[in-house]
Length: 254
Image (cartoon, rainbow, N blue to C red):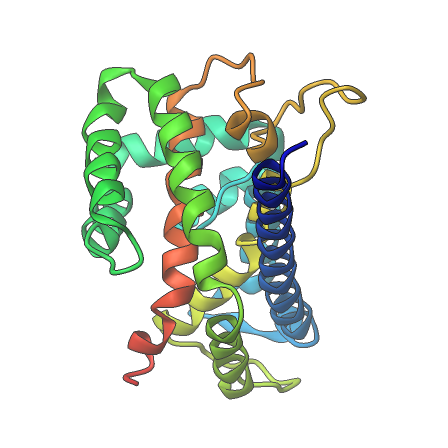
């Protein structure tokens, strides 16, 4: 093997190691945040609505790879609690009935984010415009590539801003009311670990392709899935999650 080829291989290996370390750091911080919430969540009430119902719905969404950024309507929370096995259909129905309101708002918020290269901004817009046209396979591969490229950029110090927010959330045995931003934060941190499932390592020569979305299989062109609108909405959610974390200081007025 020539010295040039050897250097290229070493550089590639080092890059993959750095990406893995960055992702592990990102997930570790999110896991810490999620654990911190568990100590008080069962004792809180929000405008007469039990947080236990929200927690259960978030668990269902996380296990089905949905990242949620806002308080879901009570009707959707009830449906997710009563019929967790039908999560994908419930969430797609919710998006359609709302005219994709929240999805459109998130895209508008993050489409010009500085962490996106100009090429990625163009690709993201093409994916956004095409999601209603049924071009789901093309969208899935494009979004996974964008996700992969920005993951390392948001790992590290940005994730710790969540810990500061968590410190300001109430920790009490009494019933209290949270504001809308606190509800959104709790909903987000309880579902964002869906990204862990997306990035779970799966070996081509040992494992069958996972039923759920898997970054490894998609990025390496090994997936045999026919991707759907549900899959694309989830992938957009993963990208928005990374950009949400990076821009958290803006929510805090920093």
